[in-house]
Length: 192
Image 1 (cartoon, rainbow, N blue to C red):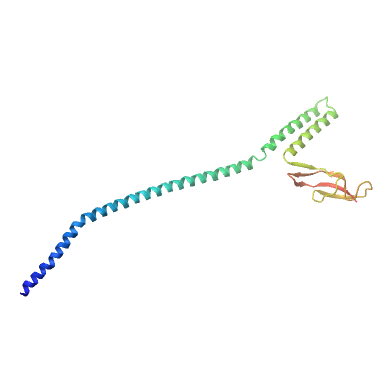
Image 2 (cartoon, one colour; image 1 turned 45 degrees about the vertical axis):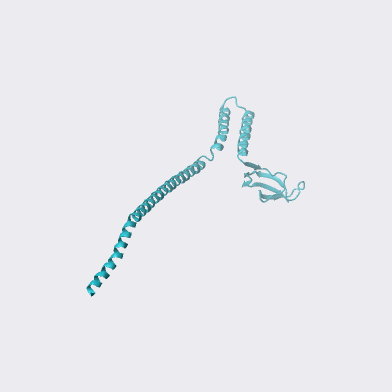
């Protein structure tokens, strides 16, 4: 009887296992389908992420190229600014050179008078001063003004009863300022 009981017990044990296997077998296609759909979803998300990464990479490369182009353009503009900074100034000086050449030709001509040469020189000098003033150069002619150590350089002091003390009585050399910055102080004689 013990062998029958064992068989009976074995048959009882197998049935639940067989039913469990059967129930697991029936659910397996649904799980496989769900896993396959899940894999498809993951694959689509991966492809979408890779596409987004590619787009961002392309944008980054375009921006890098644009930054590089802007840097090169700025360097070229700066180089040209340094190279041609004086172009306008030089263009304004050319008529003065022409005037000086005409003055030289007039001076060597047989009918040149001292007055005509002086008049030509005065006109050329006025043109030259106008060009310099146009570009920010200012003459400092302090005759009769109070001595200013910021703009004047005293060469000597002179007793002068007609001028107040510390007043410029003679200008030996005019001073110049470029855009309100002193280039050369005026050399002056100051009253004691």
